[in-house]
Image (cartoon, rainbow, N blue to C red):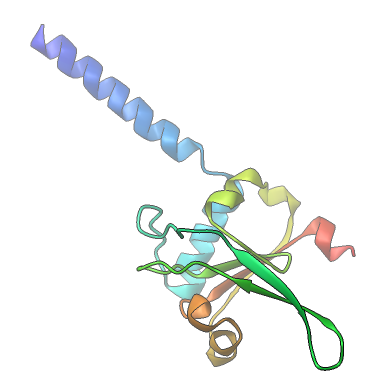
Length: 136
């Protein structure tokens, strides 16, 4: 009886673990791959969660142009910043998108990126452009 319970428990544990991995979209998995190959960064979804909300403020510069500034929550183990069509995204949000809707994915990390994005860009930035956005 103990063996039957143990086998059943192992089966359901393995099924649950596989189902969790299966919920990651192809875009999510591609971005994880780009982070590893281009930025030499291994993404760990358990320690990279950003707490809080991405906030934006709209102001006018000295020439009267509208400027949008976004502030992103910080983590203890920051992952590369994800910019999709010019806006900050979380890795979890990428699960709602499809790789076939993406035009380009590129990763950058250098002093210019760090200057532009500050601490958020310290690990690099993954830029994603969708096909819809590239036609505009």
